[in-house]
Amino acid sequence: MQQLVLQNILRFILVVLVQIFVLDNIQFLGYVSPMLYILFILSLPIHTPRGGVLLLAFFIGLIIDMFNNTMGMHAFATVFAAFLRRPVFNLFVSAEEMTNVTPSFRTFGVTGYVKYVVILVLIHHTVLFLVESFSFVNILLLTPKILISSLVTILLILGVMSFFRK
Image (cartoon, rainbow, N blue to C red; front, top):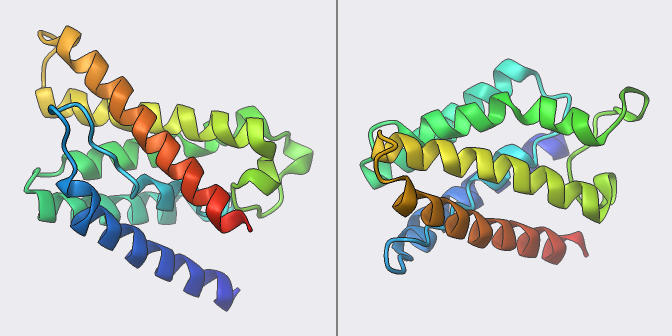
């Protein structure tokens, strides 16, 4: 139990530092904004109390907001994705298989984990960029930004998880 808590604290710190000092400096024509910090919420054990997950999501989003000067947009999007994490999880794992698992390739299988990550990253990025633009007027400009940033984030998350799988 203590090892899991220490592992999550380390993961939190590492993901925030990488996001702030490396990934926030990557911009390509305004369309690519990788958001690795969402990996922290995706990787929490499934039976973590929902209130705790929402609080951690708010806290990590707020830290990213403070460094990006985005006034709560990341916090809102991350809490929204964290709120939908359990229902998305239930799509891939039956009730009798539900133990205190940490979502990964090993526990979900490759296909299940990829679907889990894709759905939650798309939800997170859609909410984030819709709140950022605060309108549907530029939906033709917003859609590629959501899709490209989501694709880069998904590939980054899958790469990190496959690297640490070994």
